[in-house]
Length: 354
Ligand SMILES: Nc1nc2c(ncn2[C@@H]2O[C@H](COP(=O)(O)OP(=O)(O)OP(=O)(O)O)[C@@H](O)[C@H]2O)c(=O)[nH]1
Ligand SMILES: [Mg+2]
Image (cartoon, rainbow, N blue to C red; front, side, top):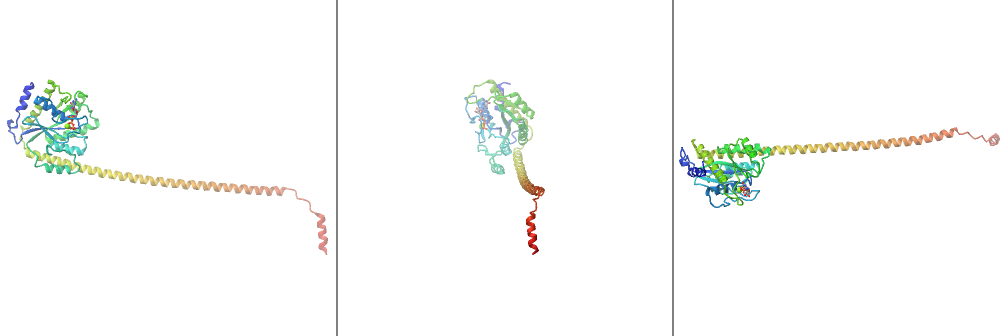
């Protein structure tokens, strides 16, 4: 198949021409999701550039290397039946953000409005409010955009796999993976990581950008192959009887349950965290009390030892004094006694006779 064949098939696609008729669908919504700055808006620019085959323009406002620019869900019409949606990128796989990602992916939030990372049940309120604005006639194709520049840390693989699996359950379509910056990292390893997660369809691109939009057949062809794959997938899916209204309700229920479970587990985590904090405080208090008791015991022992030492010294001092006195008396006793003064004694005796 050459470029023109792909173009013809993509251009001719219409739900009305599907085997079972449109069944209530009237456009394919290619929903891009992924981390901030991984090239979602640039991929839209690339698709528009290839499809319109005119001058390059920064239609989707791709900017900066850190991302964080796209904050609204904006639609970019490609053909009469295919529209791309630039969803807000997320910083982490944090559970608050994943609730929002699924609400965007499930097409439960209004298009063309700012996306906000709601906490608590605020997301449910927004989904309920948006109910009347959302059309059920969009057929969602989820596309996960990832830059090859970012090596996926091994501890994130399960989380990412879970995200892709949940996106599949929600949309009933296995997400297609689009790898960007394909020449700026290890493409083979990144592809293998996604394949190991069970992803079957992976496309890799060097996006056309404001700096580099030199047209190459390779890039053009890859984009058309991607769009052709989307069409084939849609055609395959609508071969079965479908009910877009019920599907939208199911998606809404799915996200509501997700938010409910997320809130429940966050509350449980908070309770556990609180308990752990109280346990730690109690342990610290007990430790402090134990330390204070030990210090008191040591202080008392020191005082007791000092007193004992003092008494011992006093005893030794007294013993030394007694010994000295005893020795002095001993010495005195051993000294020779002086002779009796006999004469004086005789006079004394005479006097007493009278
Ligand atoms: N060389 C190269 N640059 C790219 C590619 N894809 C995106 N860029 C650049 O990377 C930067 C971010 O790309 P964006 O398309 O704005 O990324 P984003 O995913 O839309 O970002 P947020 O809207 O913030 O989530 C821009 O400067 C792009 O020019 C690519 O495949 N190759
Ligand atoms: Mg963007």
